[in-house]
Amino acid sequence: MIENKPDILAILMQEGIELRKRGRLWWSCCPFHRERTPSFAVNPDRQSFYCFGCGEKGDVISFIQKIRNLSFKDALIYLNITPGEIPKVDRKVERQQKLKKAYAKWLKDYYRQLCRESVRLHKNRITVQDDPSISEEEAWKFAEDMGKLAEIDHKLDILWEGSPEEKFQLFKEIVR
Image (cartoon, rainbow, N blue to C red; front, top):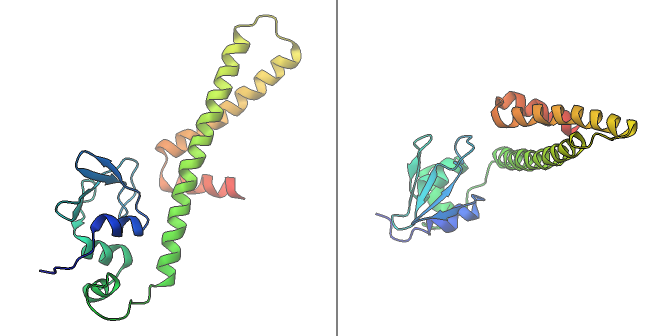
């Protein structure tokens, strides 16, 4: 058994995993598969993790092996458990991880932006529908807003229930 393992919570946070405490466990979305709700549980007392979604489990060493694609020996070196040089991280893998994080952040931020806009347009719709004396200009603005609302609802449906391909296609259309 290895005695001088680093704290699993510290390493996970260092690797960019956002953890939230619920009860005695810490939770996050699993870094090993895509999901919407957290199923990745970390038990600091046992210094272990388990994903209820994909079944990945282990300790701080196996986590580093999987997330950094390292051998056991290189993971020990990376964690400074045994003397030696830190292995060179594959730049391609590192870049892919950064892109995945940026894409996940964009999805979350864009979804929130669309929700705010949808709420604003729904409030306007209710206000205009309750006022029988609207002008022609206000009526045209109302019709334009309803078109925007339909487009926003379609995009929200893609972000909420769409396939990864549909979400990425939406991303490409928006980022252009």
